[in-house]
Image (tube, rainbow, N blue to C red; front, side, top):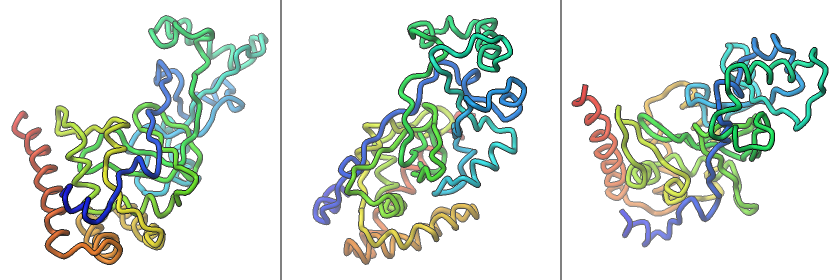
Amino acid sequence: MENIAARKNIPPIKKYAKVEVGITTGSNAFFTVPLSTVQEYGLENYAKPMVGRSVQVNSVIFNEDDWQNNKNSEAKAHLLVFPQQPKSNQKNGAVRYIDFGESQNIHQGYKTSIREYWYVVPSLKISDALFIRRNNLYPRLIINEAQAFTTDTMHRVFLYPTTNINAFTASYYNSLSLAFTEVCGRSHGGGVLELMPNEAERVLLPYHLENTELLIEIDSLIRKKTNIEKVLDFTDEIILKQHYNFSQREIQLARGIWKKLSSRRLNRSKKRK
């Protein structure tokens, strides 16, 4: 596969983007909250859009409507972003919630205790895209159209200025890239596939600007929970065959390697049960 990719001049993701870990809050239970907690404490001025779990993203494009649906379903769809010195008025929701956190000893955790202000979360950057850190069937790359924060359950993907985000994202959904997620990642208990940022950056990406035209259809298929192989039947023909001159045999080779490695990983978890 590496020889084929070299002949086709297919670079890794790191040519187009930088992958970083998500936000380390020190206590997701405290800093990521549902709408009911925001309303209970009056935290509207401090609650920012967030997505923290793969089950909250059933698409390739995570948009404002998707975030609103999460919020209204009582998912933890908010990240609490407090100032260094919130108003001391005890009626202030931030003060009351911070006091609640201290009553739960949140400020004594390792990450929170080494901060100047334990309740101020660092590295609050919103990424262009998201990459699921731990996965079952296959890892997903998602456009962060909703401009949501994410915790360290997902990686943040920051595109370089010359990269088209729609083409970048659509280009990922092909048999070659998914095969390399299995090669670059690591398998954990339960058949979970995990990729750290440097491993995700090594995944080969057959980027082509015209792949932008595929994005809406890929998003639609995945929202409908279409079998990923049917998605690949559609994308491989264009991404690999038309744009990178893969032969049918080379496409079948990439698909076969992905299926073999992913099946071995998933079957290994079944044997342990």
